[in-house]
Amino acid sequence: MSLTKRALAELIGTFWLVLGGCGSAVLAAGIPELGLGYLGVSFAFGLTVVTMAYAIGHVSGCHLNPAVSIGLVAGGRFKATELPHYIIAQVLGGILAAAIIYCIASGQEGYTLGGFASNGYGEASPHGYALHAAFVCEVVMTAVFLFIIMGATDKAASPAMAGLAIGLTLALIHMISIPVTNTSVNPARSTSQAVFAGGIYLQQLWLFWVAPILGGVIGAKVYNLINGK
Image (cartoon, rainbow, N blue to C red; front, side, top):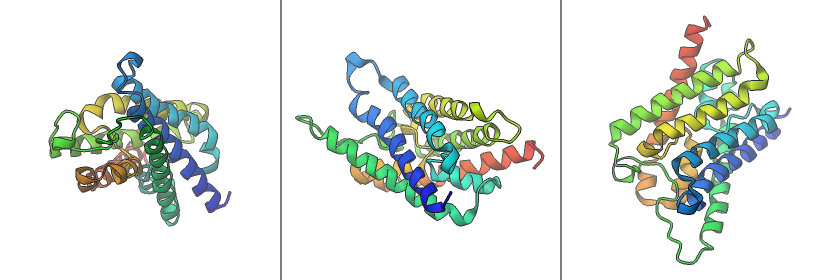
């Protein structure tokens, strides 16, 4: 499969991740009678990964996340030379999805943009968590995410279950960390929303690149360490 086609698959997959996850947060989570809340948004993110894992996993590996791609390079599972294509595609896919969400959301009378499902710390954190708490949370959550991705996609593991394991892991990560940072663990997802929310969310975007990438590298390296590689 050509790199161009794999990058296109990543664009489509990340588009679905942001549309499904952030779309549920922006369009549905605030409606009391739906009862979606944090739990529903958590499962929405997990379901996007599960569905795309089986749709494009055999095409591009279904990274959908620059931190995952970089972590897989650190773990010896992905070529560093292909990173630019994947990362650009992931960011573009996320921004395209955010544009669709904004187009739909702004069609409601009286709509205000607000945080637009962006990630943040301090006053931009859903429950006021400080910078150090947000940084530690994002590093640890992404490290665990990559650790499980490395294990679930190992040649010794069951390939049929990898998508489910990875999707459920992302759902659990959201259940833990939405109150802290609104959950990133994905620089493309964070960038897509911050571009529209602007202001403080763009100013704090650096953390949601640095921490997930650091966590991704740590998780991949730890997996290889315990797996003897």
